[in-house]
Image (cartoon, rainbow, N blue to C red; front, side):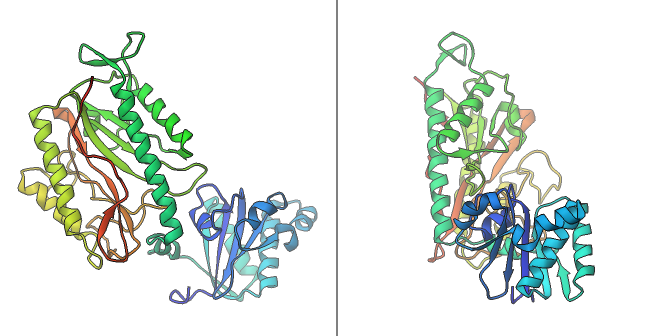
Length: 399
């Protein structure tokens, strides 16, 4: 805050997907709230009266919205916008807030704009500001402390266990005419596998709000294709299995991808897979604290180009070959800092960074895509290590 010249910050709005509120509120299970933090002082969490116990579990100083006149303003004005404005005025006056105040959180864009305009008019001693570059919270999210890392490690272990469950589930099916079949003789479908995955995640206290990628053959050649739920699971076709759950109810994420073929793989897929795995190992071995994160995207592009593949560097906009960036930060955000792209990126690796490494090759018209992804982290010794303890085998043996 001092570096940015902020005298106070405010985080407000509904709690759902409100990462700044989750972070500053220590994960308090409130449906909405406002946190005021003056520079050098303990944050104050303002909450609804029905959630006073949940707010108290945050460990922060707390106060009821009614302490700042919410009910009185509603009765007097009959207007929720005016009541919100009155609460902010009373809160700032009671807490002696003045100077440069930055706002964060969630809310309707137009309504938030009108509220901040009205608040500035009502309290001319405030200089209400926002951030257009790397925000205070994006900077804070980029590195993890011991408590955050423990949660990330737990999610990683549960995600890995779910992927192993999935492999075991597939292996437990019989084979007919190069397809997996259920006990009733009907073909096992991609959709049934996906439902199994979601059930296992839920049993482990995880959720995946954006679904699961379980994409076979050509579908796997489109990086974010979820896969065709109606398609039967077939032997010999590469399956891109990308699992990115978080703690149930909102919290820390994990993100891992394995590509495998059931029973056997073609020579073409074996060669491409070997190149993706070698790229993964090459960039991870080279990674160091203090180096530009985007430089490893350049390294990955050069690696694939030397082997004859188009990349986003050599062929911008390509839909074949290496078509995306090398990775991204992981935490309360699935895609955060540090970014491992080499475009408009000034992120530098530092201790406490947690991020993915996920090189891939995609050839949808040749019927395959391949991606390998681990979540990595830098400890105090500056060495990259993986949180994703799962084998990288192309062929899953059956029977």
